[in-house]
Length: 221
Image (cartoon, rainbow, N blue to C red; front, side, top):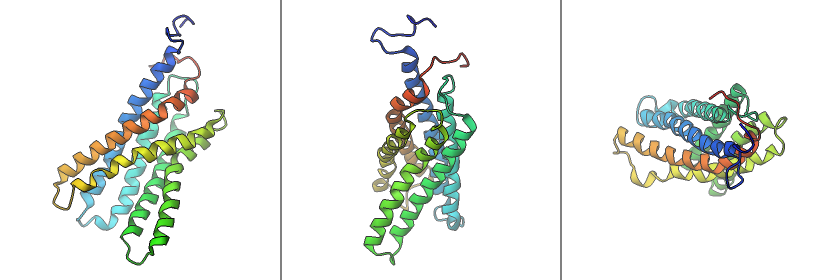
């Protein structure tokens, strides 16, 4: 690709614009599909003999979600020289998702407990909430910090994106109850997961472009 072809009329590099679109599409699909796994696990185990295993199954489902998200992110950046290593990125993203789900489920369990004082619950919720939000981007940062300058910015940007995106998963609660059919639960949470995925993908795209798309894409698409 010549330099004339690589620059748009606005002065923005064409490969960078392509990267942002590619990132949003891949991350949206990866996270939306990934979130369906814990959503389905939660719906299928609620009120059944498997309910006592629900927490463990949700964490394991969260690992699958993280693995799919990590794969989507790594594949989105694959044509570019700044791309993260596929398998290590998948591993740290899956581990981060497991930590996030563990924190979230712990907060939920504490909230249902009648023996936990309100002040203790609020303190625990804040700490666990912060840990859950930064776990995945911190592990991802650790994976790329040796090769990506200023990569520490990945942590607050991603944590902020997830803080906004996770709000979508709370919106179905006023509209569902114990009588909601299983199919309805899965559809509602799948839609919530889709909106969360779009939010996270869009919020993280500019920084991902900066870190991963600094060089011309290789012809491997």
